[in-house]
Image (cartoon, rainbow, N blue to C red; front, side, top):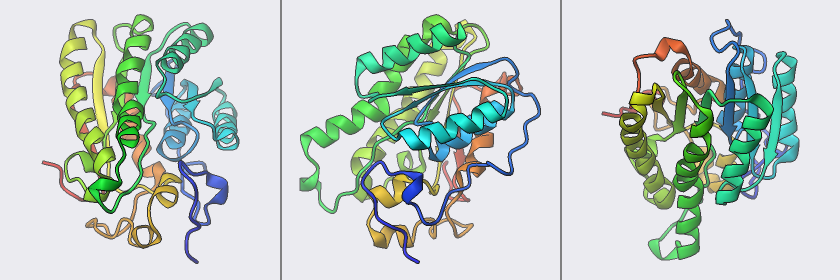
Length: 277
């Protein structure tokens, strides 16, 4: 059965082929006990999988999301079922005030921010360059990279030695598809931002890394890609299939944990075998 097309950014409820976020499979081992995390785009997809994994590793989670309230409540329920606190903060991170509000809420609820996961993203596909409006280009950069800058700035006063910032880049930043030009351009910027910020914050004991997923099955895919692209999604990987959000989340756990104490400025590929050199 063909996957149902949706309006962006998409919701889990309308997906016929539901992603696996690790609801039934992820087992924690206390690797993030006592830590407090902010996750943007935490309502579904990679963000939900990361929230589940973090909670089961002992971390309280603030879930930032746009307007997908039902999906966000579902993520929050999974976090609380793991015995951890879940805070929901809806709103558009393209706004500087929203970024500041997220950091302020985390500080008031948790008293600190140990982990910042900059994961939310906007994408649309285009057949020609002329289709890309000035407004669309600006909005993509505002959500995908400028918001990261603003969230880091807002969260830094609440982060200390041992803090971890994890940005979601993409294989698109290394091997861009032309129909995803605005999105891919931001993902290249994210990898560069990660490398530079890691050097800038190293003397504070704050590590900065990125995860670069390949094709991962989330609501963003059927809501932003044509049926033809959706049907072939993930076939271009050596593993021959799209990945599931549950298969990406462990990379975030590693980078958030003390086990990664000597890893900073890295971009960790989770691409189903597509090379990033």
